[in-house]
Length: 342
Image 1 (cartoon, rainbow, N blue to C red):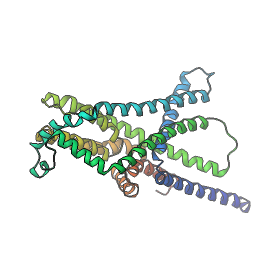
Image 2 (cartoon, one colour):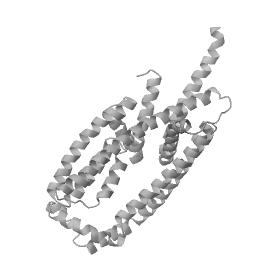
Image 3 (cartoon, one colour):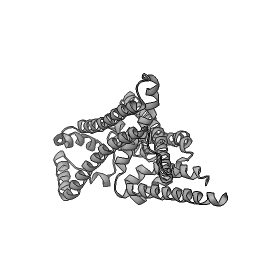
């Protein structure tokens, strides 16, 4: 009997190893082929639909099938996410305003910064809006080829995001349809995909809560605390919007947003910049606490583990590696825990 069961055990072991290899190759190809925006967009649609579908099924009449609920919900979620992307672009364009007057509006900030910064930094600042415009034009002319490549790459990224949204909706819809009897490799690959989707869900939803809290504290500081002290920073709404976006990155996102606040605060006065620096330190400490409580509770990982993963992935893949690192690490740790290796 043991001899008869041995071939089946060998097949199961081979298919399990093959599924691990396929998952590793797929995740690496996502990074090398620059498909991370499409992957994140698709997983976001799938995660939101997967979280909301059971709630809607309990509210809607029983005659409505799960396929119909998931189909309608997938289309709505994908459409709303696409609309949110375009709305964010329109918001930042509206905040920046007319590019022709941008330099004129920035000069008062530079003039204020001139009185606060050391002389060796002031020497590099433009002395007038025309000087500012000329310097920017020369930089654009010098790096015109790189700017063209960056513009094309931005369009490609938006295209991949839209394709990812559509794929996420289709996967969410087909996932609920009854399929044929799956083979062992199909089942193991499905388990890898399901575990990666759970890792994405745990990281993104937990980090979204952290980002929302950081954004609320930043808004309180910029819109209430500073105005009560008689200080009104420029680009306040833009800083708040950037805070929410970059704080979706664990640990480093808070540093990015608050560094921008310190730089803008320095254009007003040195004391405002110092106050923003104190705010940075307090929120940064809060970020570690929130990561330990929220993200750590989801994937059983400390903040330093995620930060180390981000450091390694950044060295390997640049900025996309920083974005992918928390999800990849959560998935890897989930696989190791499932295999009882850690």
